[in-house]
Amino acid sequence: MTNQLSKNVEALAESIQWFGQASFKIQSSGKIIYIDPYVLKSADRADVVFITHPHFDHFSEEDIKKIATFDTTFFCPNELVGKIKSIGFDKVNGVEPGFETEWKGISIKAVPAYNILKTDKHPKEKKWVGYILSLVHVTLYHTGDTERIPEMKDINCDIILLPLGQTYTMNSINDAVKVVIDTQASVAIPMHYGMYEGSAEDAVNFKKLLEDRVEVIIPFIKG
Image 1 (cartoon, helix red, strand yellow):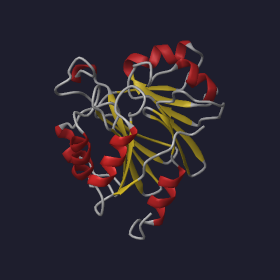
Image 2 (cartoon, one colour):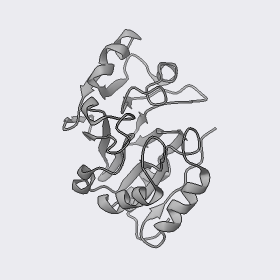
Image 3 (cartoon, helix red, strand yellow):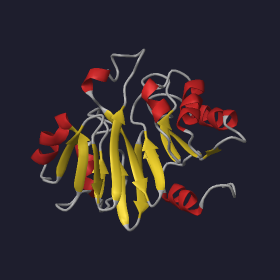
Image 4 (tube, one colour):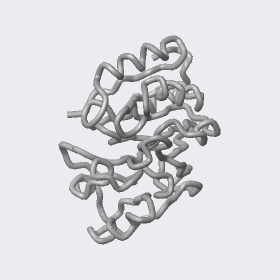
């Protein structure tokens, strides 16, 4: 990484593990955080789990059961609260865009995630979300499944996790690049490519387009 990144940003970025799609594990201040756990190959113990929306590759009961305990806290769209409770977990918080709270020192904000053109994929009226997490003076933005939307111009972050598309989410690699610029991120980590949309080559092109402007980390799927 470049020397221009703060130690906090660099340390958090290096802790991030990708499992494919929008599935990540993040470690911060002794907390184990999962976002949209999917295709996990091993069991773990999550302190908190964030779900962006109910599509099978983001809300996977099988994968949740691999990492959640009775002490795990969940944040999810309101429509999933009952489903998560029905599989045996009680600490479930329903969210929609605009939701804000703090959990054990982590500031949490739910923000809109939707399609403008591909409106049948992630309709705005569903009120599905991305998350902005403040972790040890670092702001991390997981966009959820979304196109480039106007609300992103009001978001500033240090690290952004965003899809490259172009079937269900972003309409082009250039749109993804513009989102990084919109949010003034210093580190960008692409996701949601190589499985159901997009390719590994897209990630390489994304990094080239941001060269000398933003640190792009092309993640390797954790085995």
